[in-house]
Length: 72
Image (cartoon, rainbow, N blue to C red; front, side, top):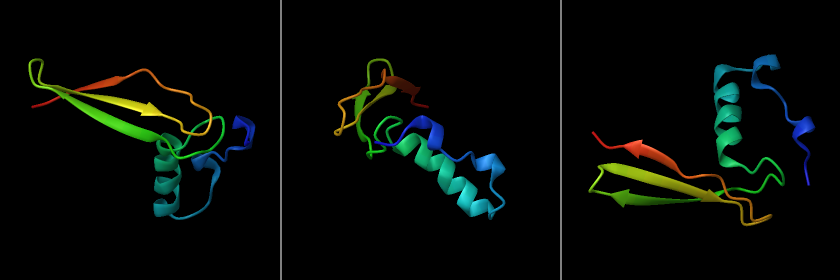
């Protein structure tokens, strides 16, 4: 299991712009505790015109609170 203290900050890298962009995407795509790829589900709620995004880690079972995005 990887601890949060071993994460590399994207602002301290002297790599290319694409490498720093990939690190920020990995920040949202991986579990903070065990570095497993998160599973995302999206539920469409047409009565409120919004999408509810849920994510869960299959490795350690941690879930985040659902995020709501408004449809336009």
